[in-house]
Length: 153
Image (cartoon, rainbow, N blue to C red; front, side):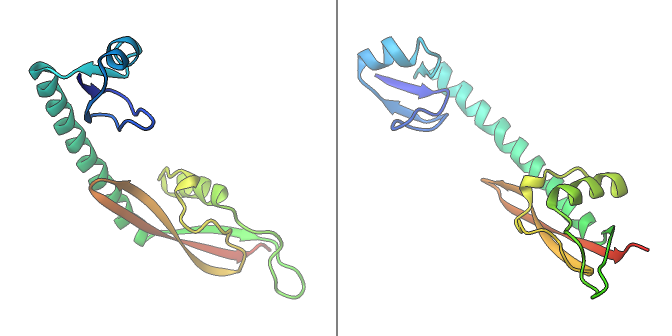
């Protein structure tokens, strides 16, 4: 029996793939659980339409990520930190704080989990951190944010 998977199935395939399974497995497990549909011409056309819509959506997401990457090139996120007598900074600025600073100062919302450089900014001056803005079938878009840390008076 040929079926089109509507969800990822472990050891069988990914969503959207057409696979051949035994009649019992398809009829008694995959189709009733909503994990697959019978492979018919109508379902194949619907799958092709869904794939085209997903490709257009991915292209739109990539264009949006590229636009954000261009904006990030010219942005400095400003922070102030306490400094000890030896000129070293107390603590550090975490990716979560950088995420909040980007939103508060520039209105750009980026998830803290998108930071490629997981280390915190812990030095006065400028620090450049990479952010993975998009990852998908269309490729990958990585932006760079400049974090400027000054001494709190």
